[in-house]
Structure formats: structure tokens, C-alpha cells
Length: 131
Image 1 (cartoon, rainbow, N blue to C red):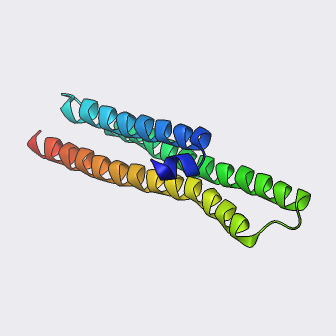
Image 2 (cartoon, rainbow, N blue to C red; image 1 turned 30 degrees about the horizontal axis):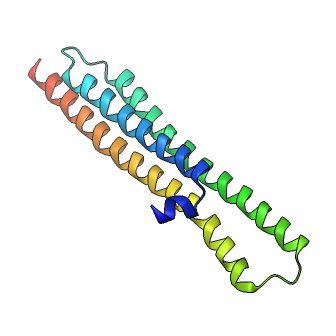
């Protein structure tokens, strides 16, 4: 919870929302595609890929949060040139949390996409062998 507040509640909330959306999107389309009687593999894989794109959007959003944080930090530094270095490093530390969280979300969505697409392709191969 401390990292959530330190990283900035605005961007961290957006990133958490993107995590939930990406996870739900991939799981939903995996379950629907895996349980369909006549699966259209190309369509299912395309929809799963959208979940991966949501994860990529989270990564970009994390870096946007970092850039905005750095702009704010540099603005404060330029207004107060006698600021202590420990405050500068605390500000840089705070700006690193958003992109790390965004990277973790992207990696998680990529892992989910990889597993789901592998299982869909394997099931489609098994169904084609049975026919």
C-alpha cells in the first residue's frame, strides 16, 4: 500500500484498473474460446492479443506517469536550487514506481496471453486430429 501511495494514487489507480481489465479480458476470451464447439482459432487469438495490447498500454501509462513526475520534480528543483539531495533522490525513487508497476502488468498480461494462446492452439490441433 505504501508503494501505491508513493507512486502517486492517480497513475497507480489507472495502472491497477488496466491490470484488472487485461486479466479479465484474457481470461474471458480464453474461457469462451476454449469451450466453444466450433472454435475460430484466428478470431480467438486476435481477441486474446487485445489483452496483450492492454498490458502494453499499462507499460506506456507507467512511463507517462514517470515523465510527469520527473517534470514536477525538476520544476521544484529549479524553483528551490538549495534543496537537499535526499529530497531529490526521494522524488526520483517515487517516479520509478509507476513504470516498474506498468512493466510488471505488461509481463503478467504477456504471460497470460502466451499460456492462453498456447492452450487454444493445442486444443484446435487436437480437434482437427479428431475430425
